Image (tube, rainbow, N blue to C red):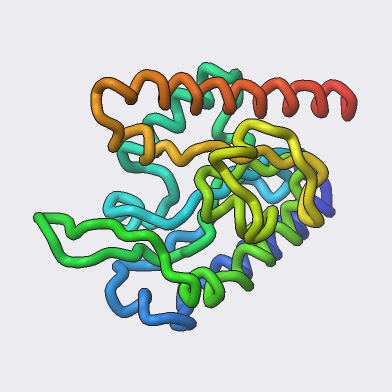
Length: 210
């Protein structure tokens, strides 16, 4: 049964989610179907932060429900992490995209779009107060660890930040999916190995808290 503190945090997160639903802080709201806010318990020990919603996320209003989300689910399962127990979100809450094909083409968010969404992620972090943050991709890693962070050199290392004592950055699952056949397995193995590190840390902290 949830404690009163947990209920208060769930309520606070719900209030922020309702406020974000009407966000017009940058032009992305004009081309997005809806705000895609984070999901998961407000008491989650682990928060995973990605880049921005894709087509399926934009349609369903949930983060990581498309092909990249399915790969993430596979990695979480292998790492022994129950997605229902963690908080999953993105640095940007509306889909950045350009015309092309049937669904449009995803594009990286611009810095002004990241800045416009910053208050929402700040509030998510302040309410959830995760012990572990997993950054999926360079954009999330730079948001958490600073602009000097280099994913190519610091991926898979445990670091710390003001928002969480344990931070690990890895590649974004969508990056795995766009790899040519000769490098896809290697990237997939890297991503899965990093998620196992996060799973090990989560198990360690849960045992300490028990």
